[in-house]
Picture: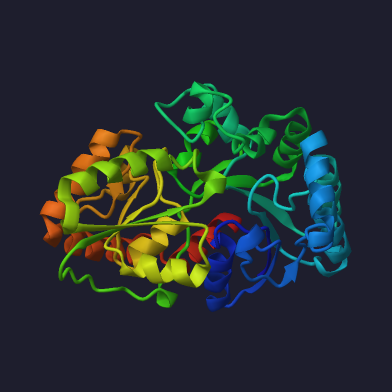
Length: 377
């Protein structure tokens, strides 16, 4: 089968491609590399000219005046020039509703051109999209990434990008896609509730992890318990980092020299990984019910991760031995769980082993690739 994967998000399509290739299929991945993360691809439509320094001030001025990033125009143009190479595929899968990440009307035009010379079209619900953001705005669950915004609409500019998915322009793209796709696949439990009852919903397929590329790091606790928090200011509020910071302040005061707390912010990747590998416990995100890629890769290494590990997650996988800690927006609960680990270091070792077994069983990239093939067929 010839398969075209469009867009990238936290290495999901790269891992899926590796699984599909191993199963003997022909796969092409076209993306912008997931912005600054610059994940590999076969063809790139990442903006270069308008993202370069000479246009930096002009780009900022346009964004300030019109709340629009002009590099989206260049991305659309670059994808347009790739269309002659993107034909003859049996299946085309989009990473989300804004896979090309250009303006909505241009995205519709490009997708129409793409589908004229290819087979069936599938869509992933991974990250923000029209249905998920509409669902969260209606406060249908106890808490979500939108909770800080719902409590205070002026809390952060982080939500400008998220709220575009319910804008009039994007809704036209959303409706167009749902007329054209064979179906939509959720990639974790955070995206399931908004899709329930939708005729195009095909079910959930977990994120694929190529654990053969991720070495398990056998946990040794010789002296201090090392806790790691990597902060990205671009998603500080929606990840609930403030809850982790407040919990860590209490842990530091409570345990002093028994713990080493590492907090980083926007450091070079190699330095980040070195500190991350040193940790026993990794604080990932609040406001989630399931794990994203950062958490899954840390679990594959044998880290104890505080992330989304809610009731739906436990019920679906029938979790009997803890593989991660659910991180709610509750400082008291975070302090209690962290304290338990500090006072019971053997639990860190056992949970780390459980986490690796879980990844190999439920997120194996070959098993996941087969699940996609079943759906596409």
